[in-house]
Image 1 (cartoon, helix red, strand yellow):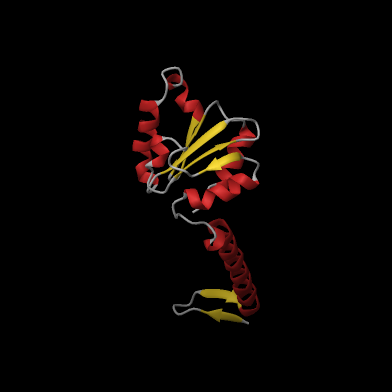
Image 2 (image 1 turned 90 degrees about the vertical axis):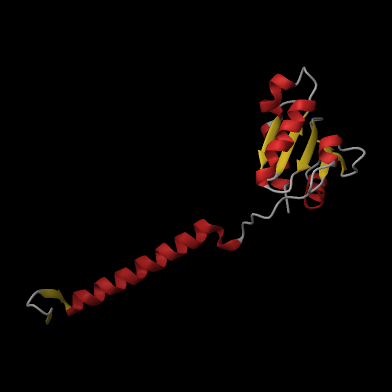
Length: 157
């Protein structure tokens, strides 16, 4: 049986219309599932990272001497809005992290690190300084990819 549309145009036969509707529902379901997966289903957060949230993970990842003591993290990290951390990787590379108030505030923190870096390090700042959201990480030497990965995975709100 075929349905006729107003005006005399034919639509799909009824048995094909049911098939098309079923395919459309399945396609919609798959598209919705893919969109939720891509969005992370709410798992991701834009909440700023903090020293308190990050320090414990660094210790678990093998960083030693992990401190948030303002007298030990350095001047710039000590005055960062969300705190500062000083730690040493398993490979002996020293890391300072300054946690700015938000991602928009990192520019001034980066500039402060550049301005106060020893002259010998200034040409290499792009190699030893990384920014991830509101966290500015500064290493003594260019970090090994595994070191950098461990540190950035530890950044927590």
